[in-house]
Image (tube, rainbow, N blue to C red; front, side):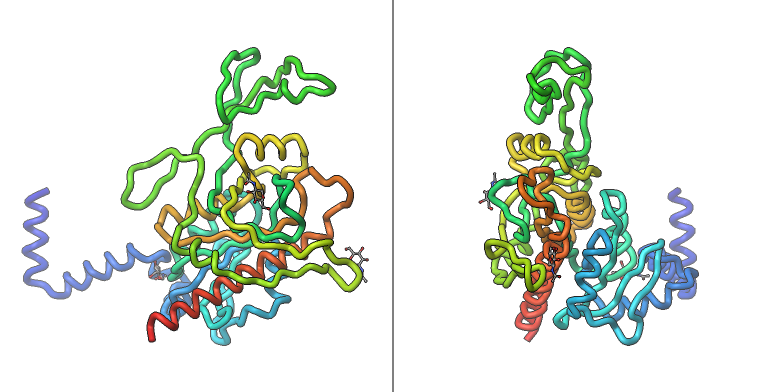
Length: 340
Ligand SMILES: *[C@@H]1O[C@H](CO)[C@@H](O)[C@H](O)[C@H]1NC(C)=O
Ligand SMILES: *[C@@H]1O[C@H](CO)[C@@H](O)[C@H](O)[C@H]1NC(C)=O
Ligand SMILES: *[C@@H]1O[C@H](CO)[C@@H](O)[C@H](O)[C@H]1NC(C)=O
């Protein structure tokens, strides 16, 4: 080992070409795409006009809302790039460089997509928007939640039948037997923490991920006029509102069940449920990149009493997008004022 090192030093000291070769190797190792990748020149070129905000949404209705808003101005040079099956759109929103990408639904897609953004492009933060189910009766259709805490609630220890254990973070199925409580062969599940890896820190088990505080504080200044009407004849009874500081939960589960919705609210204080936010936040946190989430309430997660909510999805997308766009606008103004 030492002999090898001394040998290397000897070579490097007398050989400028070897030094640059070594540097080139190091640089190539540090970048996200191999030097021989056919898209490498394109990515290098895009990177030169960065850094960008990575704008991530999960499914087509959410990305359609962005398209029809006209807020995204595609780059006239390289408007998009296809990588790993996803299309990365290059351009700007309110004069801020943005790359937007549809991740696909659920946790793996969301996490992978954010990691690709961070590895391949020059990205200074992740803005995530989309729809959400509400688990909190004080929230209404069209409201936009900017959560302060997000948890992954899809990982459980499934307990043995007749297990006497009673613990926090536990869902006992017997308590939900209908028409009366009793025994249930499904026993109970105990919700588990996540293994959180963050650059420069030892691995940590956490249940709640906390939003990056500087971006969260910036978001609190937002004043957004949210949309109240789905069309000329259908309007919500009240003006939708922006709600800050609540708890969100993510799982690879679409919640359409009133009892489970209530359990999440009572046990964890969860106000909104979705399938991606925790993954987006956890992936960004690992690299120490700022991240913020905007989720518009499109349904009551199985708590709908009166009307079907499917048509409210568009309104929820639009309102979450409006908040995200205003936030990106603020980032742009802050950058301009701090650099001038
Ligand atoms: C683009 O820039 C980012 C940030 O500087 C870097 O992590 C990434 O590797 C670069 N991509 C390529 C292909 O060089
Ligand atoms: C439920 O939502 C309302 C806002 O609509 C909020 O004020 C309240 O704190 C939320 N409840 C919990 C437990 O987070
Ligand atoms: C307005 O939206 C409601 C709810 O989606 C729908 O039932 C109705 O047909 C729409 N009206 C028009 C004029 O599009």
